[in-house]
Image (cartoon, rainbow, N blue to C red; front, side, top):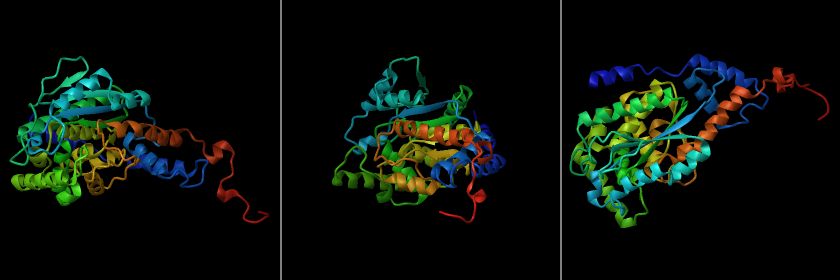
Length: 361
């Protein structure tokens, strides 16, 4: 598929349904509760109404797409873990033994495991979606991560994965990642898009010391200098600083919006993918819900740039889609309250405006 075809696909993304939002707002004002008493769940339910096009939105299923890819920047010593861990963890996902597996089972969420560009050879498995765009990216500290054509391939594949999930019945499409070294890539993307300096977007990752953190910040700064990405061009940023899994997740976000589904962002890596997606189609963030606030330093900057407020803050930084899995229940509850609660008239309950204005307390 050509770039022109990609642009045509993305151009079909429509804004959320404003009439459904207004109808939901009016319904919510009549529900049997004090106004605002459900806090942020009320605003979330209105967002769901707009995305799903109904004043009484229903969630029938959820899927999390976990994309894995390796990063050449590990050659700079940005992590203590060997690159082989990426492939090993993918095998763990497929065997059902990772945190995301446990959480997905608990939440009743389907998992889609994707090899976006793992460096090591993965054994065949019926549940593994093989994209295999390349055996890991280039070292962004020295040059581009991938070609522009590979960046396009990532995004297109992600769009297709999201559309497949929607067709299979998922009203919530979550994002998850696996990739040793990918917090460095996410930090560079966040700095490139938001303009925040590397010391504000680069965190410790897998428990790094102060000296190791300083070295990692230097690597991000070198990557920005070496690549000079165009912050207005999502594919340019992705090709110069990204990862194959980040590109696929950017496509998942776009594909979720194209399918008019709720897109549930996990943590820092997924939100970096959100920055790419928003560059490619401004306004796609209206379909996104931030699951949680990662302990990774750069996540705050990425969320702030997108104007998203996370639902949870549990000091997590695992990735894999774990935060997204935890947030599925909150989204389902927000939709259920708007859909199933009785109004004051339906329940025969007096609201505040109908109560006597005087009399004994």
